[in-house]
Image (cartoon, rainbow, N blue to C red; front, side):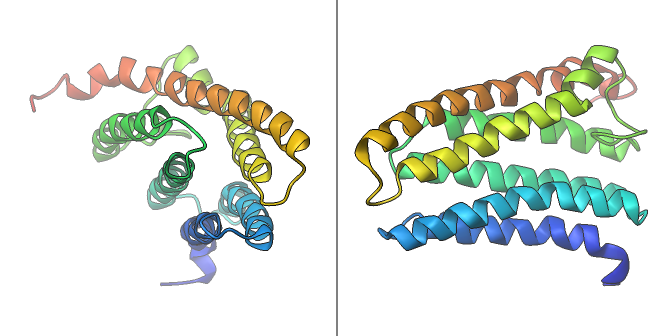
Length: 206
């Protein structure tokens, strides 16, 4: 692999392993482990913006990069929801919704990719203004990302061993509210993908 011309893709893949390390630390009953997890979680989600910046700045945008970016998003997000459920912090509904949404949208987008379309950008499969706004606008993408990252970070902070109980209780309530907002965003942003998928199957069956 040409590392110089694939920096963005390397960052996309690397952040998955950073997230895995952060999640693994949550299963250690240690304040230090949780603080490291908190830091690594912030780094992992920051890398999501870094790979896009590198791709645009150094002209490394590609269909492969688009796929890796979305794949990384799915793996990281689902892993956190699953871990939080396994730890008893959130209901199982969260990972179920996240995984169902991921399989649904990514199955449709795989068909779009085979026809030369991508999830975002100039070749986006979204053709309606409302679809582009919900799926690709900076406002929606940033709002979703902020709600999700804030929920994850605050959940970890709330359950950090030896944290002040009263403080933890307040943080936990805010984190759970943000988690619900994030999962609602997750569902809403899938609606245009499903709604506009009909055109992908107009010229053939299966």
